[in-house]
Image (tube, rainbow, N blue to C red; front, side):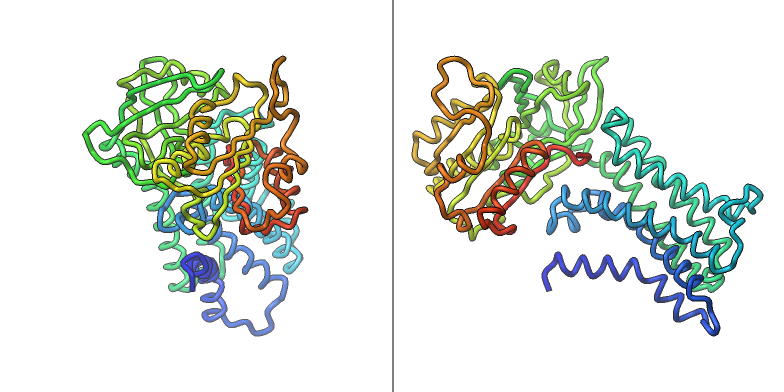
Length: 439
């Protein structure tokens, strides 16, 4: 059994433990089916909420087989499942007992009100996570709300079920509930406080800040204590917290590592896309950086069966690809590589000279194709957008024997994936990196 499958099985077992224990402990003679379903939904829903920190908490032993971006998307999708289960729970319970005042009345007991408030908080938490962009919430504002409301929901749900649930009258069930709550908060505390505290003792310092393109900044940093650089794979990403001069925001954000593991420093290339990233140009050598990572599975080294690579990127999506191409170059790998690189205009092309020099060297066998949507007068290269015709032109007719690595905005990725699928490229040969966890 692979590690990924084993973790998936363990997750399902953990979620089902209280349901199984309930069926063993509580007799069900002449029981109402809707009532039993209602209780089962509540038990599973609580366990899903309590286990959410396992998916979003950046625990390496869980993240490594899946990639953190995949876990975060599952974290969001499973939250929707929890909402559905917990919304249906009181409806079925009221239908089973005929007591609709459990839902409709404002004169419920405090035990019932704890459940109502927990459900409302859950809907709000999921809602602001899905519509953070439309609500125009800053990332840090959303994150603070999420980190406050999430644990509050678990506490409210715990108290509601602990004092009102028939199944929790059994000692074994009470211990399952208590242990689940304690473990969930221990993991949350480690993720939120203990790990950042440990990381602060291994901070990095900025050594160089350069402008790679308009509104694009490349920031180089090294360990402050002459320690070794954290190991990573070309193409992975990390979380960075910049500690800079007074007045500049101090927030944690995730960015791709644009350097190669063969280089004696870490580099991230960051585009100005919001209020925080607009301050990247004010970062100075000597500033401190806290690094958490690396994460993700967007790396050609994890797919050694692929003997020819195609990188299709848009804009700042070049950063993980630069890392992989530089690694191929530094390790003298002569693998055939095609790079289709989309930008608005020529001045927006990051790493252009370096990529051209590597292509000229023949290591790897790199073919770089720039595609500009708003080319300047005199541009003789490809124009428009990366589409099926350009992919076929530069990658050949037979595509399924190649590994495709895509990075860019979600609409860009969706269009390329549809094209590749239409050409018969199998899903296992299409690897993607998303810019945002919230997109």
